[in-house]
Image (cartoon, rainbow, N blue to C red; front, side, top):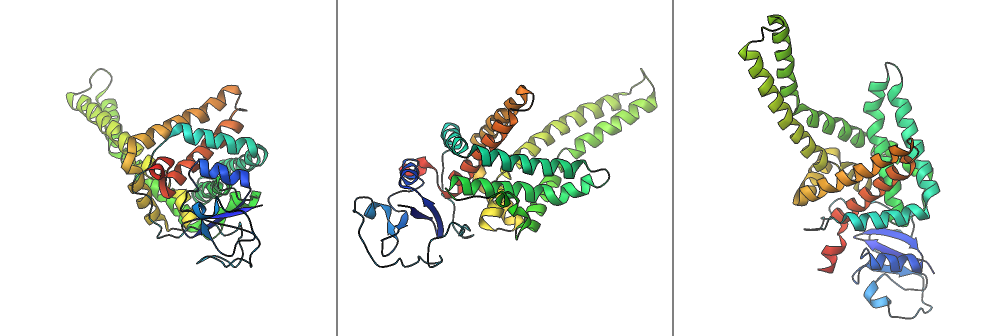
Length: 322
């Protein structure tokens, strides 16, 4: 018997009894989560139905905001759904859940990732047009891949087309998020680089062995500004790291999504930073096997990040235990 469950006003499923129990174990489904299955008259909290034997009943009545019958295609989360006040960043828990999903759907996950990255590489290396195409397609491609993984971790049926969902209604906001975040993140290192360039020109003009104290001072200040700018770039990149899934999942505009990502990540910034360092290491490990291992490690890291997003914006297991 298949089950459906709700996250806020968002309908999820169908999932099997075994998958539902796994969601209960992971505290994605809690006692207060509304659930429904064929034979139930209405949506009920899981705590009510978990101990009640199945019995015949009239056709279901749809929950507010949902279609008349459960559908795996109803995926949009309400924009005004507030994220939890606190959360836990658990690398091990995200990794274990990601590995379970990857093992079950390895073929489709590897295929979707490979196809998206091939399209991205091809678009970026086209002579003369590559830079321009990158501005238009990289954000929507990444957003579409997050949509694919969001459906996977929620037990939804997926198709290759889901990996390219970023070219749908959220195209403009995904594109703008990629461009704006990239520009703003890079601006912080520009003063330092500019000063180093000036120092280089000044030193060259003075001639070899005749570098002035001013040139040396420019190098020191430029190096310091570049280092501080790099720290700012890292901060902004991590703070805005969950902008893409917010846009594709909640259909948010790019700037509110960037602000919400920064606000939520900022509650435990250094834990999230460490999380991304670990996922980066996991992705890089794949390159050791002549790059073939990337087919495993990159999708695994992407799935971990998707679970991190779910924990930050729908509630982590630790927060729900409290």
